Amino acid sequence: MLMKMGWGFLTSNEPWAKFFRPKFTKKNKETIDYYKASTIWPDLKGVLPMVNDNSRCSGAFCSAKLDVIIDNNGWCSPTVAAEFLADYGIDLNNLDVNCNMIDKRVLRHNLQAIFKDKKLNRNKIKVTLLALVKESSCLLQNSMHNTVTDLQIISKLGVSTRARPALCIKSCRWILPWYEEIKLNYGSSTIGNPGKVGLGVIARTHTGEVLGVRTKGMGIMNTLEAECFAIMEALSWAIEKGWKKVWIEANSSAAVLSFNAKEVPWKHQTKWVGMQNKFIAIRISSIWKEGNFLADQAAKKGSLLPCYEKEDFVGSPSFLTRIENPLVDYFRVS
Image (cartoon, rainbow, N blue to C red; front, side, top):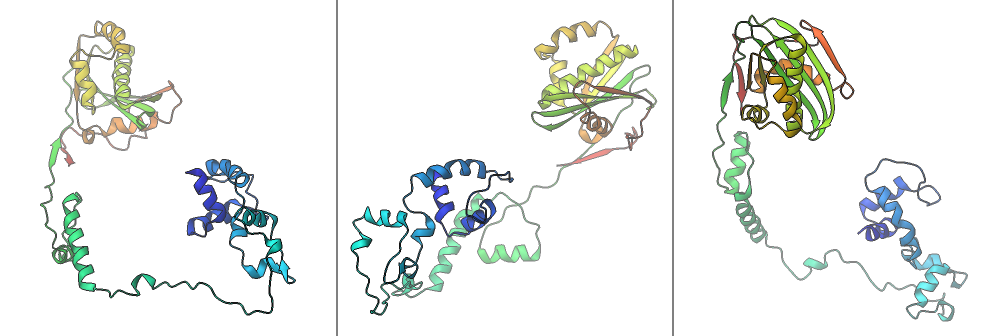
């Protein structure tokens, strides 16, 4: 494939080749020897020497006109072109040139040759196109905006329509913890899956007051692993602060279900068993992302930190623009 593309790069007159040649060649027709951003050029550049070494005729010679290689009543062909013709039994040295004769066209390109002996039937083409549109319409899965123009086009094409699914609007609410219980809302921000992870944990009292915020960079890991690490980090922070009753809440139902079902990932099992003895009560639950935006803000800040570096804030830091209100409903549209 690359060899074919390399030959096209050297000889083709297609638009892509005309675009690539000036971009990746110098004025002396040699390829560039400096870096230029491209996804295909490094591989293409590697095969060009092999294409040149195994090609007897380059694009410039093959496309040369006769009046260029005939000079002073004789042949003035490049050596490579002469050798190429010799391979096919054409010896330019023994081929006479008669300059007294008038040039005669031997071939004329006829762009209308396809339709020369045929009459176009517009109605037949129209019927064929409409049949193809109707046949492929069953594969469509997208939706339209139900504008007048869209409906007119659908009607003219004769394509059947399907009802668009109705929007589903659901609400959730951030709930205050019990008396003397500390609620730890955590979130993880992953740039890619796997990708660079940042954690954020928010500690709040039964009155809704923000006690503090912890952010931490966790390096490269997948989404589920990041959520499990966030739960362990929230528990570690609670042990450091001496909180005995904690409620951990996150927007990852998969991680929450694994901890509640006592199916903790093996790398956290030993630490998880030891931590449970240091608390009077532990609750772990999930909430939608729409009701946990404060932890997501902290997690995004944590993703900017180096691996395993953490920052602790007392109270509500300035980068938290708004806080969940237990008296407000937050909606999800799906």
